[in-house]
Image (cartoon, rainbow, N blue to C red):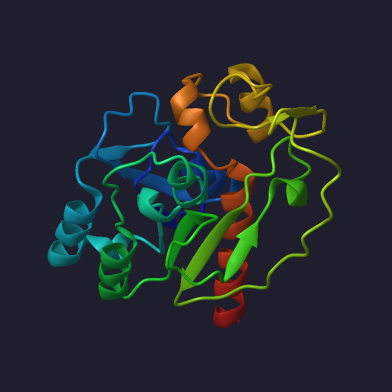
Length: 232
């Protein structure tokens, strides 16, 4: 008899990179995103993620999940916005949905993961992951707040060199590609797919937003291990 797999709810699911990692760790995945995501590789609800989460809480359907993952928008406080864009006078009004997302996740009573890029997003950095930890072709540092569970922080290996491309008028070669923007030696679509392990979408914008599935495979495996240790 096959044991049913645990389910994870992937909020603000975008192209599905986080969800793919959880599937690789052994989860069934359901997504939710406000935009149309025809290439999202799992069942998903199209709509406002926070409204959908409220619906799941009120109806009790949230109980079908073992874990909730959320990657809420926080453009107002990510590194690019507070750094380069601010220095050049760019930018405008940006969403910051981290706090309301956390409030609802606490209401679920479930373990959860909130993911954010480096910057000033107001999350606990319970876990920080980097592509070099998984021998990837990107660095793509990401921070994770873990609610109602914990795991150890893996060692952060020394980077093997530069991110390839132009910086301040100087070109440097290196083992990593820049998986954002275009030009200036940044990675093209095929390079980004290969560097991050994402094969089901070739849309440049979606690749620049994605995290490597290796990150959430590691997180999902750590969660299942921690839960099994509690049961035992």
